[in-house]
Image 1: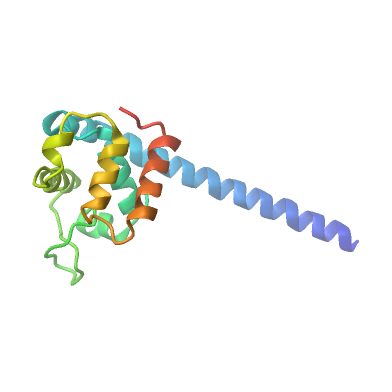
Image 2: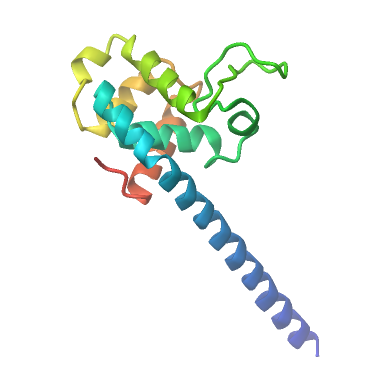
Length: 154
């Protein structure tokens, strides 16, 4: 009887974890699909690979679930003024946030050398080395992982 109960618990836990995993994957795909066209449009305008734009937004928002993305329309962790008292900038729309990120990148020294380059690895490394993240090694790993996992390569 004891083994039957243990087996039943394992089966139930497996089903719960499978369901949660399916929900997370669906949410991930949803964020990517909702924002892919915007990233492609900005890629054409600024010469930054859409894969880089989209992967950074995904990581910075936890796939669109973060407080900053929901309350502030901030999809890139950009610092600035807002109405809720956090250190992150508030945007009128998600599109404004994406555009602000691209404008921020355009001002960086590495931009001219990389503009139009589709090598996402060079972009991710340059952005990390320029201080975009407080943990550049882990940040690069996460960005590159999203690009590979969801085949965001341009």
